[in-house]
Image (cartoon, rainbow, N blue to C red):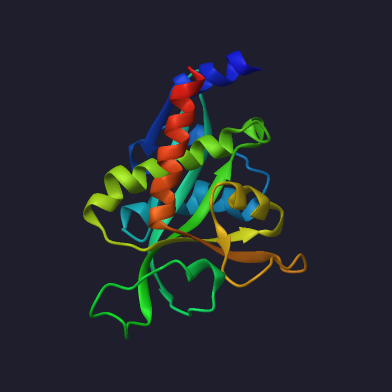
Length: 200
């Protein structure tokens, strides 16, 4: 399993959806959730083309299939100091009265069923975080990354650094608003890189 995992990791390609020409492989993608599959197969390309959203996919060059994808959109969040996810955030000097904070929205994050429960979701999140730190963050200011997590995915997001916006998760809700601050994304990238180096 470890050998195959490492082989897949070594053969991953990070591709913007507009640069990916194999429509059949997009149609073959299945994360197990219908509305997410529908977005990826029928809406993601046009949304990217018209600058509504940016969709990045990870292509497994070893097995010749799409491992997963994520979609980012620009957003703002209303600042409430009592929100758990905002407590460590400090506004810049002169902006104390600002109530809306620039953010990015992780609109979609999905892994094909072939790769689920094997650690590839964490790998894909590391690719996303590195993209935010080393590419997006150099040219765009944003304080938070937001996600509306499906109920069964909240534990995963907690493991990769997200916090619930308001208190403890409610198991009766279908979706949960979660957030990670940009400095925490940087810390996650540093720590994951350190662990990867030490494991070699």
